Amino acid sequence: MGIKAHYVKSWTTTTRDSEYSDQLMNYLDEHFNSETPNARWCIDTTYISTRNRFAYLTSVMDLYSRRIIAWDLSDNLEVTNVVPLIERAKRSRGITTPLIMYSDNSRL
Image 1 (cartoon, helix red, strand yellow):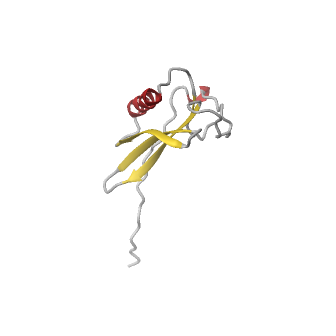
Image 2 (cartoon, helix red, strand yellow):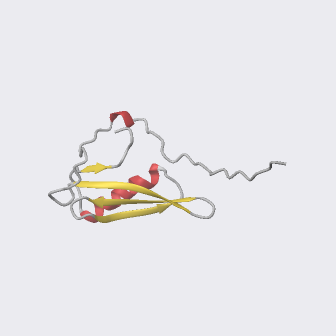
Image 3 (cartoon, one colour):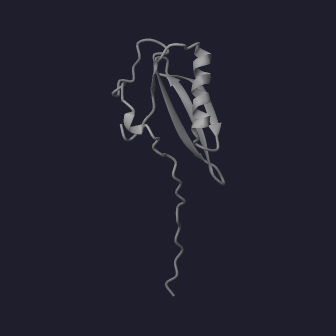
């Protein structure tokens, strides 16, 4: 009868541009080596597939030491998870001055 199984891979929208995405600047310009601690940080999210959905592991790395200084595991990509993570990283390092925070963005 010509009947065949057809596997459809589920697809989830995970990245959405914010209202200010066009205003973001790429200050690092792919120069990921920092001469001093706490001057340049990198933040990234990894998607972890579980049985029923995704889990999202977001981490903050100091580009000087290449160490993860804060991380968060959540079930969504809401900014309400990311902002407290950055604040926690700043508190753990005693940061009160501005620093460069890099996040990969295909539009930059």
